[in-house]
Image (cartoon, rainbow, N blue to C red; front, side, top):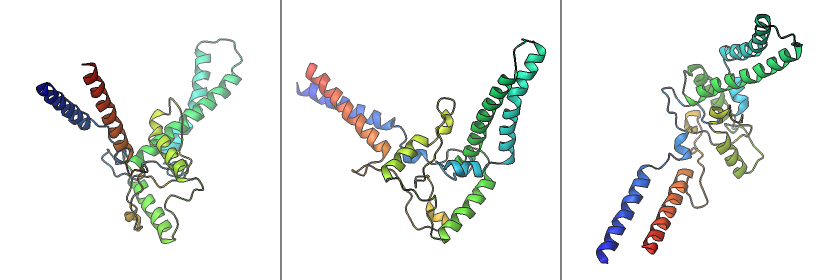
Length: 225
């Protein structure tokens, strides 16, 4: 009996070690740039993303806006249907405008994340936020929302550009969670990190939840045995 309990305890420790070795990266770690360029902002406000767009982004946006009805026009010329095409041109222009905006928005966001070349954006961000720090203003703007709302907005909008095809979502809330060190702008403050009342971060909360489930499952198995 004692040998069985010892073996059971050994399996439990192995299971805990295996789970910890496969723990998903926590939210605050996912804010670090995984690209070859520096991270500027892990969750930029929509206004910043639009203001930092390059001429190539606007060209892409315009190309989709004009290109979609042009494709409808060419299609009708090649294979005439006899339908009244003007409403389709309007609808095509709107669809192209929307798709072009989301693509241009994603291209600009990837520069903030450091996934594509971003030297121009990095210099502009450094100059802009350093000036705000000198003026004593919050780096990322002020918000009248409570901190839990800001945290929820951050969790919902971070990297949401990767799922624009499923559900377009922009960051429209000013919050302090941007994955960068404020010291580079001249602000002596610790980077903002989401934590629970117990001082746990999202990844740590997830790991604890898995540990509890694993221990409960092992206990149920031992009782049934």
